[in-house]
Length: 138
Image (cartoon, rainbow, N blue to C red; front, side, top):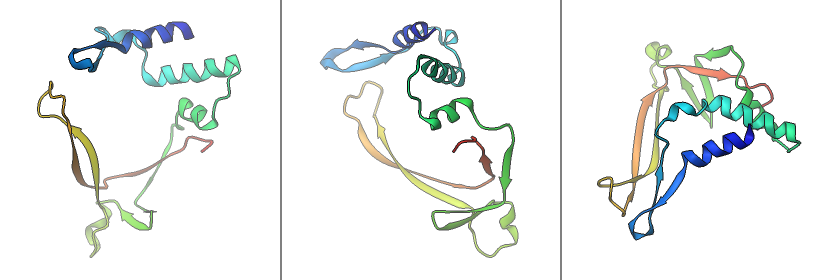
């Protein structure tokens, strides 16, 4: 089972060399033969534990997945900020439901551009729902 998964992984990420010694990723033509990620991760963790390898408890929890029930909240405190869900904020005089962040992303002019540039991309949005997922051991 493990050897079959390793073979599939090797076939999925087959490296080919292009001009200027650049490498690109070639994907399988038929992605349907790969298992879903959650099933693959669970199998990898179970097989590693069966062989006797040390597996971090966090990885075991993530591979099992969260409990079926999630808890919903209208507000939360995170990193010193008090945040509300947008639907609760209608009667408030302050706006605490908006969030903004900046990411660095590699951008290319076109697909064959070998000189990408790093660009800052800003995202702005509102909190529509706050959910707590329980993974058990965390």
